[in-house]
Amino acid sequence: MKFAAPLALAALLFPLCAEANNSVVNMSHYDLMRPDFVAMKSEGVVGVIHEASFPRYERDGRYGERQLQAMRAGLLWGAYHFADGTDPVRQADHFLSVVASSHPILNSAPNEEKTRPGVLLVLDFESNHYHGGNMSVGQAVAFVQRIKERTGVYPGIYGSENRLRQMFSGVRGGQRAVLSNCWLWVANYHAQPRGIAPWGHWHLWQYTGDGHCGLRPRSAFPVSVANMRKAERNIFNGNNVSLQNFWQQHSWVPGG
Image (cartoon, rainbow, N blue to C red; front, side):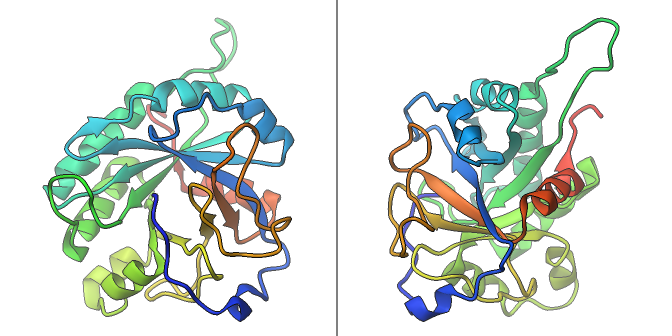
């Protein structure tokens, strides 16, 4: 999730939803610092979405420890899979295996119900810089169907606005129907995303990555958070209450 989106007119930045809030951070093993999740929460962050798996069938070595730390700090947790052009069902199964095997039980008191918050799931549909080629639209459909089959929820789909528009806008029929069940996460570091078929609107907008951000004023679009000087930050299209509800509605509880 580290690329620069094409430049667009600054006039497209607003009007942004009056209730939109800058409260989600995404991370991966490329973020080498020890993140201060307590400080993130104190600065208004509500949730973290972390890479769990990437080509070919690897697991992010920092995923599990950071999940436990973030959830102990009171943050919501999400996981994404960086896709390639190999078997999409096998990719989905590997992704869910990593998420399930890392999911902590935060409350281990013997006489109390164990707390197992859900995990928001995402397909990272970027151009693949690893071996294995790019995931096709058909493979993306097979991936999200497998996630739905095994978890009962459709994942989100993430990518740059231009790539998502290029790959999905012409999709029709059954593929369009399946993809429309997914929620949309768009990266654009220069302008507020426009509607993308078949979704029509975005749920999350990643406006900065590794400190790359062409938006102003900086007070509204900070590029850092807590001890992360160059963060990957996201705006949710709604207020914190609706974000909490959205996370609960779309997340998966491993073993639940």
